[in-house]
Length: 81
Length: 242
Image (cartoon, rainbow over all chains, first blue to last red; front, side, top):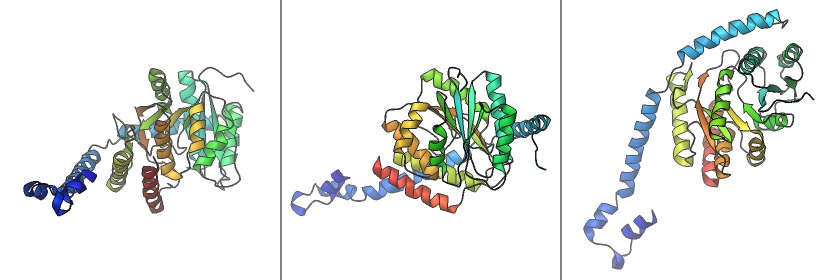
């Protein structure tokens, strides 16, 4: 960041050659756009590959049934569900 | 006090209006621990739930014994962080597991946390929804997007070395949790993030185990728009201070 500022925004006496300055000035914008694209791509990919745990949900339902039956047996007053 | 087995696990369960879920999660915990031969205790910190959660907890205490079920309630809703601090005072285990009491975290992963901890002698084992075969059930696209987006932000800003910063299904070595609780000041989701970030700062090691998060079965979720705003504020604060 500071290197960029030093090179791109230097006063006239200290400026690096013109072609270098031309490439340097828009660099932060390019980097921002590149980062933006990277972010979108990464989040999009991770969103698409987010695992859906169907079996875990089904298993939990079974466990809940077993738990309620056992707890009732053991004397827990379960409310109506 | 009963003699405690080596490697006893203390489970901290902060509850608020979990009358339906509490007996189920306790049953699953007791079953998991007895199946795997792990010594345990469950510390229930209820914040004065009006729905009868404490009555249910008392019945559970009768069923499982007061050496296994420790009721340590508080008068009113005082927040998650202080609930942990409060519950930890009564913990006699070498390890402390924190988890949600609403069945979104399944106790079956706890033996895997223990195994992972032994494998690398980790100070913390964090359940992750984002790696391996970890995942979620019952989330629509919007919720998943918010989750992935928020996590991406935390990875970029904090570079934490853990894939799931906002997760709250974790195992801590007792001394580690005590140390961290002294240092962490945030609330809500940010609190969970801060614990990992501070842990890394202090040189603690974090292992990960993929877990499945099944969105809550009974009751009302406590996530809202406010949470998102305070998450962002908290994230920026952490970024600025670490």
